[in-house]
Amino acid sequence: MVLETLQKERNNRLGASAEYKLLMQAWFVICLAIIGTTLILWGAQAVRSEFGDFLFLEVLGGIWLVVTRELFFWLGLSVRDDAVERRNSAAVFALCGAMLAVTLTFAGGNSGEGPSFFENILSAALATGTLLGFWLVLELSARVSVSIAEERDLASGLRLGGLLVAVGLMFGRAVAGDWHSVWGTIHDFIRDGWVGVLLLPVAILIERKFRPGRARPFPNWLLCGLLPALCYIAFAVICLWRLGPWEGLRK
Image 1 (cartoon, one colour):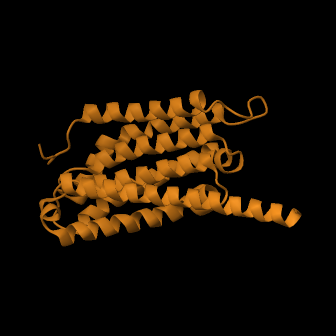
Image 2 (cartoon, one colour; image 1 turned 180 degrees about the vertical axis):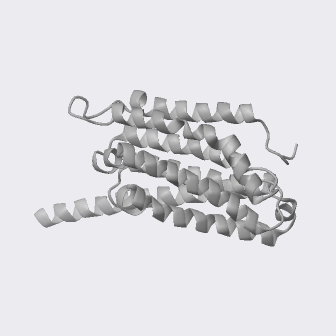
């Protein structure tokens, strides 16, 4: 009887892990679809007209996601360990937000005209690298990964996921547009993306206020998680609306 019970529990764990693994794989495919759609709608003329160029950037986007996804481990969260093996719902929301944010920065870097693939890669690297740097400072300042990976706090996972999506939107928009020069791209990125950095001190204060503690071991996921996440994204959408279309956006 004991052996049968243990076997049943093991099968349940394996089944749950398989479901979470399928979920993360499906999200990866969705991110690839977003990149592909962006290339079709707003990529360079050569990318939209030549399937080989489109396929190269689509595959590059997949590699980009795989590499950056492995870097999340150094920021305190792991797709394999936290989302799949431990079936941590808080980590799932945070990591899905992080993957979508990386997708947005890569898509933004590949929107607009440019003379070669080098310019696409440089623009995407500028946005993605700044996004990861933003997350690193947040992690060092507020230790949000502890709340997600160890405390399994759903509110923290929602907040981080929403924050990263918001920042990904702003940084992706900041590198979108026609290519002129390296310094011109950096200048435009700082000019259009600096406002995203303003979310960092706000996020640090919110993380320190809403993180789980003795007085509030289980923060309300709606008020302390979903609401701040939606506020972050709404702020990003307003900023994008004020910036307007990027240079070279097809009507």
